[in-house]
Amino acid sequence: MNLSKQILLYILFALSLTNTGCESIFLNEQSTDDTQWIKHTAAAEQCIPYEFETIEDALKELSQANIEVLSSKKVEFPVCRACFCPVGLEYYALIAQKQLPTAVEIGWTVVSDSTETHSMTP
Image 1 (cartoon, rainbow, N blue to C red):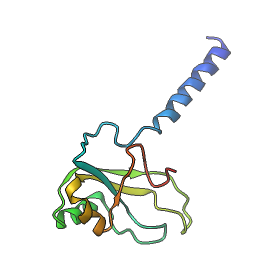
Image 2 (image 1 turned 90 degrees about the horizontal axis):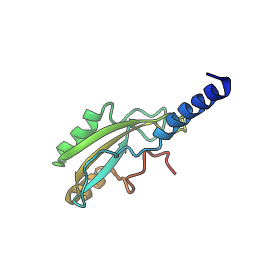
Image 3 (image 1 turned 180 degrees about the horizontal axis):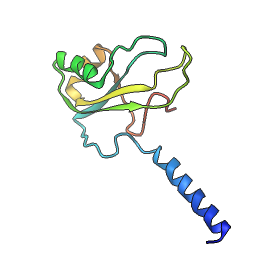
């Protein structure tokens, strides 16, 4: 294989890796007009103790508020390590739309766009 063809293959491979990072975290999830994704960060900023150490802890809060979780996921993303930087850990839960006011009341945030991948998304 000649050098230019080999370089082209490396470039195509590298581009394919960068493209997958843009897919929605909800790509294969089933949701309807009756359901809503919500999220909660592990902490407000670096250097602040996590409110929830695990996704199980986060989901327990919803369960204690009598909110049924239909699906959930943990999303980690790279951030700086300075104390003013956001935490690169968020917990997501799919709940019934009718339970949304309770979830917001206890501190969860509505995910407004299914293409939003995390808090760092503009």
